[in-house]
Image (tube, rainbow, N blue to C red; front, side, top):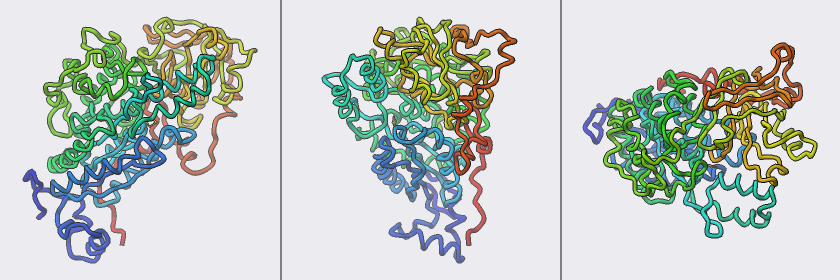
Length: 580
Ligand code: FES
């Protein structure tokens, strides 16, 4: 009989398959694992894995080893045994060609490690853009009791008395250098002022968004998501999370019970209210695919489009995550949209997300707006369909220029990001402020990996004329910290036979965000006679071995979350055959 948990609930432990009994294998497993653990470590004490993406190559997650120590303390205080499980880590800024190429690899590695080892429950530690999505996908597919401890955002950087948001201000400053408004020396000087502390990007970019999405889905201990990385409350929250995971295990509360259709509803409402990253669309679709929860691209529009933007953070607004936390954080936002949330969705505590809002308050009404004074009245992610995107495309109206949301203009087409860089400042390029810049071959299969190249820099000569936004269309993604009138995730992608491959420079493109349409106006007979751009096909990757070969052979489209076909669904936590 195992020990009761600290809550008094008797536990049946998966790790018993390794540690209980007196046979040779149990001896082997216990003897090799002791290494200073308490003498009763394997006598029915729950084995909790701290699935940890700390890495010096993922600077945003480099502090997670310290956070893990506080989780470990909490686990031990509640009678469990905490064990560090380092796993694949992906740093957004360094990994080439794009960290998205390895999100599924990171998810697969974490899933298999969780299943292969004597683990009863997991605490997932992530921060940088892909790490929390990969860990959630892994936990969903192995379906062990789990919770997420997000690493938290960095503090606000400042340069010459002004706040600098990482990501968003990089794009702004680099455009100012190209337009001649900022010297290269000043640009370099700003570089050392931007990243002021540990933690992930401090805008409402993908990392901030996914930490809050994990919370809206119910997978984060209430109140923890969005706590700045250097804030001591993150460490005390990590300790509490270490205690809580024993309760989650005792209740046998698994991701498949917490993350339901109702949770996705709440996540989409939250995504709109916070002005979150478009990358959340692909990550949530992939997660739903792991759990078998019906979720489509259209759901993001239907559930989220009319939700007001309440959070005044870059890139849609002005402030940064440190301000968001000071102003009341996620609970304060959820309180404002309480009536739009599904009250049935639970969290890792067993109580509902709505119950966990408690008596949250807004402490700064410029940072977190009231429903009566939103930053934008209806600012969810818009999903477009049309002759250019039969399977869908997305745009974030909150980050776009209102005057461009309805636009008709001639295409200027680029067959690769290299082609774009080579020609965008060519004086002969037939580009005007009305042109529609199109970049293709940047989808999951074509690049490969669907990089964040869609927010193409504008031509220097138009920047010098004061143009600051143009309609841009791409089958890739956009950084969650970026802004502009950019149509993303065009599906099917050009390399998979999508109509984007047939567009030519000069074709008339019609964007109608209010009507949810993206179309190309070409004579149907002419269109039917066209072949995919050979230059685009030549530029697309054709890897011959390794992960990249596996990836291009099996990756799905943006409209289903860019997961591998054989990774959708769940394999559960079944214990494997003996190793000896
Ligand atoms: Fe890691 Fe932005 S680069 S969160």
